[in-house]
Image 1 (cartoon, rainbow, N blue to C red):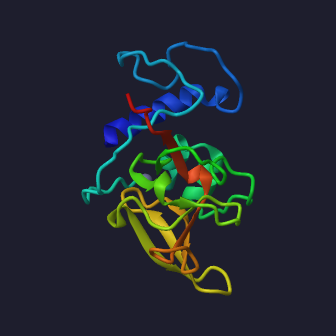
Image 2 (cartoon, rainbow, N blue to C red):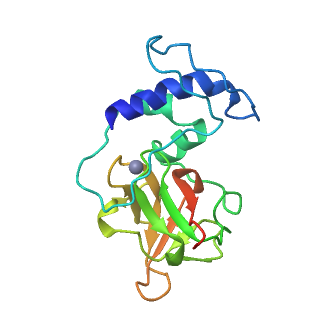
Length: 190
Ligand SMILES: [Zn+2]
């Protein structure tokens, strides 16, 4: 995994210029990368290897400086600095498609569309994670009220918070920031 992440790092360094713009460039990455490495095609969106299984206990822990090289500024702000996206602005709060939501930093499966509900808050909301083991819940005293922070179990990315005003069957509301998630649409049945 570490090798993979470092490869992604090299990839993103080479593509930083096209992250915010539409780019048709397919040029091989060269700056900063090992010249003997296999050329990779650039992409406007960082490639992630998705993991559909329950968390196996192998954490992916890196320094802030390492994450900064890999994540986009908005992802870094949300996932490493505990930021909160402005409600009703994110990519996923009104996404009703069938599919799976992965950690935008490490690709671990976090939530599923069948557990998503419209909370009216303007943030993507789920009543349970894909696997309980795939998230960490931690007491957050950063505001006047005591909240429960939700993090990715594998890379400890900040995802959002969980509240106890959700629907049945759990009564929970996982209130998650869109930039911390990557959605993959379910494949249509054959
Ligand atoms: Zn993660």
